[in-house]
Length: 210
Image (cartoon, rainbow, N blue to C red; front, side, top):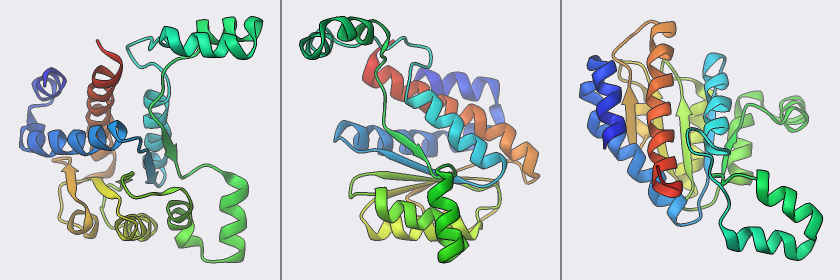
């Protein structure tokens, strides 16, 4: 996988995570190939990472992801003028949802129920067997992420952890965990970004070509 090679060439300290990155890709690829989706949760900077990942998956990253001609013709069949514009500008997307958004839902649930279960409630509503949950936690012990991962496992979803170097509750629960070699929060986050960029590039190449 050339993107993993490039990642590790730039960040040699991630060599120990090569197989975990490839396993995470395999989980995501199999889910998307079967019509699944990705749910992502994190706090603080990791919440920003969750939104960032959605931005790379739901539209073109390096590839313009032009619609197939059959898709364009279907749009034109609904409305010729509008379909022409849509066919020219829409891009292919891989369904991904960052659970830190949805402010009306989140604040309602936190006010009425249990704040730490806000991510878990969304996994319960959005998640289906065959989907994937990605929990981003520099410590690997963020309770709201762990609650969400628990719901995901119960629903037959795969769980991927993105953490720091230390053993954690999330690493115990996840099907695969990709660990930064760092232990300081900001340094862990500086590894997380190129790791998920690598995964997004591999997925884009798989489903939309080079």
